[in-house]
Length: 467
Ligand code: FAD
Image (cartoon, rainbow, N blue to C red; front, side, top):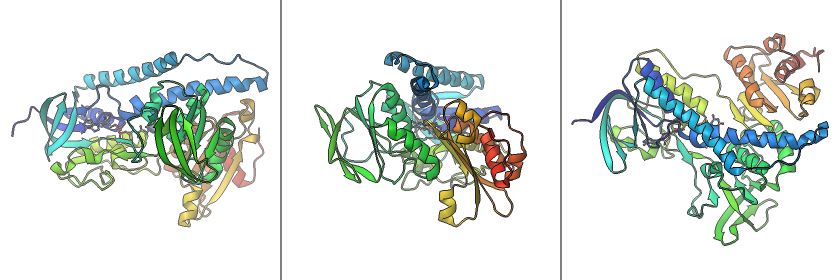
């Protein structure tokens, strides 16, 4: 059978997993094709995920901080918001990054093919784009098809007032009254943005806490601050129906402390994401896909078909860009004959809320569930000079360590910049550091990074250098 193009490595999907794999394979001397259905490279992360959400969260942070400065003796006028300019700024950031990727692909002679790919056999795909189609054959393929928002069946998705994260990031307008279904990271990030822009927000969550899976003590300062900002936070409650009406979306509830129903101008559905594994005719290549759409892989990122690899959201949780990127390098290196494996000690998680929450390694929730022995050292930011200086003393830094060996097992931080601060703890875990190593490491003063050192010193009972 004749193909329109033959490559050493075909990469399906140009998100953080796909473009990283394509670039790495090209750098290692392979002839690479990168297939992406959208004209813009970068996948969910750059176009409708990590980056646009962080661009909007920055505005939200400045708005909140400015409002709170009057307690520090500086009072600003209430902000004037130009939604078109805010949206435009976000679009510019996306364009700079995705344009940069197109340039990087070109530099490396990676052939970018726009269109939707389906496997036709174990060595070929058919790419379709606006009625035209081409066959590309490959020696190796890397599936990086990503994920998409979960839709609960039975809701009126043809009504654009019912949004997913992509709709919310599009920032069509600032609704007066909005409901966020799902109190996870994405839902709370978007709630933070829309609250800052002036919406009255309610959040509803099925579980008994926000940011399910994260230790409760880390979530507490965030919950406390959000409960002052948001109209309602409903826990252990769910939405049973959504009805389009002329006045808005009429939402019916069930659970603790919820009204029977309420009308909202917009509703954001952020209840999780599902992998795209079942949408690529993987069976034609003989690649196994489970009933949820995940493709399982070994530590070399190989599927059950030895010359076909898979990476990123499509291979499992956590669905995070930094996981996809590291898996991508492994897949490309293994294909190029290098010894590589995906074997991290941990993949850190961050909620870019205000305050931020970050955690890595063992959590107390998991330790308790699995009966793992641990000691913990907690440093409250109320004793940090830097946290007090910036008016944000609600934070907390926590280290979990092994009672016998003192090895660091995990860490969690809630507070301003927690997402930046956690990287040090990840390195400590990867390097096999013990809690004394962290306490003996001289941290610059006065910084929030010191709180890791202080927490470590707390366990030695020798903390003398507070503030
Ligand atoms: P994706 O980014 O999903 O890319 C897959 C690409 O493949 C897409 O471009 C898709 O169009 C293309 N594709 C799929 N099937 C085909 C096909 N058959 N043919 C051609 N093309 C195809 N993660 C973080 O780490 N930090 C964050 O702060 C963060 N924030 C987020 C905020 C939001 C609102 C969302 C929705 C997600 C966020 N994420 C974040 C998650 C992150 O975006 C994903 O983990 C990451 O994008 C996964 O990368 P990927 O390469 O696996 O797939």
